[in-house]
Amino acid sequence: MKHIIDHTFESDPHEVVTNPDFSALDALYEGRTARYGDYHAHSNSGGTSDGTTLPTEWLQAKHELKLDFVGLMDHRQVRHQYLPEFDPSFFLYGTEPGGKWTTEPPLYCHYLMIFQERESLERVLHQFPDEFQFTGGVEGHFLYLPMSREKFLEIKDAVLAEGGAFVNAHPKQQIKSDKIEDFYFGDGTAIEIIYTDSYADQLNPHTQDNYRLWLDMLSADMRVYNTATADAHYQPKNSGANTVYVKDPICREYVQRLRAGDLNSGYVGIKMSLDGNPTGATVPWQEGMTLQVKIEDAHELMYDPDKKYRVDIHTDKGIAYSAPLTMPFAVALKAQKRRFYRVEVLRDEDGGPAAIGNPIFITK
Image (cartoon, rainbow, N blue to C red; front, top):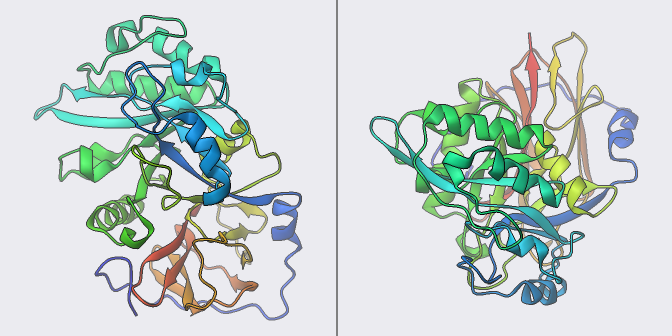
């Protein structure tokens, strides 16, 4: 079968539960609705922004593109968060810093700091004066400066302490290294694995490289979440959508779900539970656990019901279950002692990703 990368997964067959009780899964998602959006985009917000799309144009395009949220991560400034048109029910607070690590050899990195509250970004920038030289205030700017990797990880910890999320932006395109540890910012951080400029280009080399990196990180017991992005600079796009199930469609909850890894990259919604534990969780292994999966939602513009898709359920040992996708889809498996479970939805025509779910991690 075709896959997103030229890779053959081993078979790890699991027993299907007959007449399963999905109440534990349903309870996790009660009152939550599938929403679609990109955590990493740019705008022309003035100052040092390098996008060409005005924030108002993003707001106008959200209905045409059927987007529920967009993270405006404009570079080197905070002013985009204070514009009158910055609507926190659609836009997310944050920015995309970058800098060179003073390692040997030096490595250059871009990363996203995404916050639940507007003032959190300024607090983090002020906390590291030597690393950002933030000038302060609504019109304040900061610089991309060299720093030690140790200081960089302190910045990551400060973002998490503010209730924010920390994402390795376009990892293989920015960090020129063959060492997997150079891409690892710690458990509970995320990397962009679907990185594309258009829907037709979702199977491009960038996505393949980043996806392969993420698989290697999972194999190395790195509990890192994944996201998708179009990194749109020049016009609004929906090709880098993520699916997030939320109760309240506001910035705070979109960031909370990203922070917890409770989302999937792509335009098909994946609901998953391991004995009532949600996607992104780390749980201790117990005999008799049941994995439950439902797929019922998809982006109305990006999902083509006339095309064929398939569902693959993965463990660290291989594919536990595979079947054609017919919505609504539901399956329960008798869990085995594995390091994680995760779900993918792939297009049959090219093996491209319609959705790549985050794992539930299992400890011994």
